Length: 129
Image (cartoon, rainbow, N blue to C red; front, side):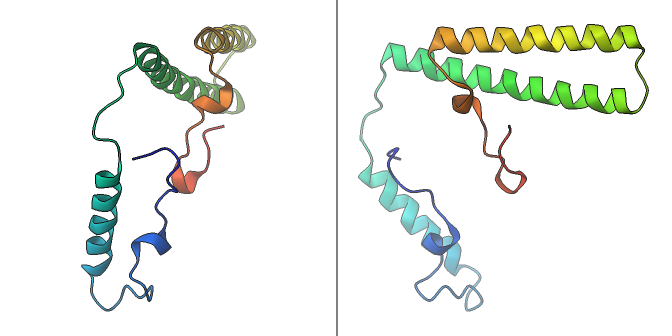
């Protein structure tokens, strides 16, 4: 799918009148039509540019690492709020998370990525960070 295509939204996949109660298969049929049109309008060949593949893979890996980092930070906050950690453990955890964040930032700079390039749209949950 071309990058400049707008994302599919509810209005795009619904029938012209927007009523989904007439037929339960109707939205799915419409979505199949839209996807078929988008796929057939897209490029026939995959552009395999080694530099773009490297950056794309790096972006994927760093996105997953950033997701894990955010989850670890949230878990650390829960444990601190719950009183499960000693002051020394809090200090060690804070330093480890800080070094991890610095390394993620260093790798982003190396690959020419910015924080927003790693942000995930989690749908109804909102953005990752």
